[in-house]
Length: 208
Length: 221
Image (cartoon, rainbow over all chains, first blue to last red):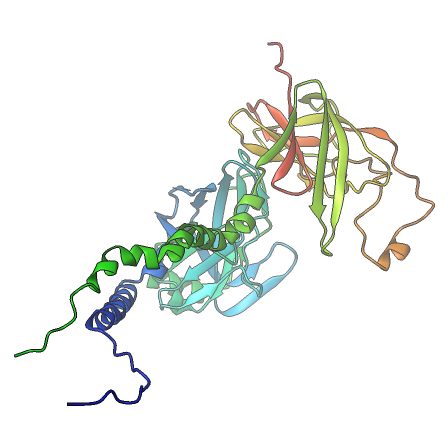
């Protein structure tokens, strides 16, 4: 038997339902974390749409039709402005034809994925460069990309070209297999006859 | 023997209680979802909507178009664009700009415009293009193919009128003796287009996404 005790502060115990709900929330968070980390969702959502092609084959991009010509290389580059640039590596040049679609387009992005696993930037200043200017629709634009790389980067190298220099997410990017071999790299690393990479033009380059 | 517990009346309110207890949160849920979508979509405007010509102000072929817009300046303010535009004629350029060498497979199209605006309206940031029936846009380029045309295609080259303010530099950069821009004037920029392209309209813009759309009267064939 007991007399009513003095009123004590009542401690509210969590019910089984509350505990179950808490556990369910934690489980949902854990499952979500596993899903996001096990599958690279972010990377896939943001990834560029790579459009593979090879030398000489036009590739249709959202904003242009692009064709890479036969690459060439040497240890000396003739920039067609009176200067010759030499390198202890190799100057790789790739003629590119751009046919803009829909409206004038200014290509700002290019990089070389070397066969050595490294990425060589082309369009962020320095001696390498790709400046095709603004191409008008229906008027093919001819430009030559130049990039300075070590010879071991050449075999198996891919060239990537896109519109925005700073942001290629969720947009088309051409992925060009240059078809280069170790034999090309060895020959170019021993060659000192200049390769020419002049300014862009709307006239087709003269065939050698 | 267990003691008698209270009759199970406590279970009754919980049957309808969850919806009732959470009614304010439930009412707010659609609003919160809508706000979340809007907040997540803020870059749709800056990265997509404002990157192209999307909001036309158009006029019937042969009539004069009144175009009004407030454009953002680089210094955080806005400037009014108030201009009247009339498309006089579009056709093959009779005289090419000096030193223009047309690339193979192209032709030069001359766009004759008559414009009117108060002399103190800043109009120097304008761009001009022609489009074909499919909407493909061919821009006016002042420095291309060997020729140098006026940098701004829609104002008189000698009397372009005021430039956007650069603060204290204005006194240095502007000459008070410069003649003002006339109340109305004509310009004839030349645009290079591929052969076989028929110009369906002329577009003029100061800041995307708004633009002035001038339809070309259908040519008698």
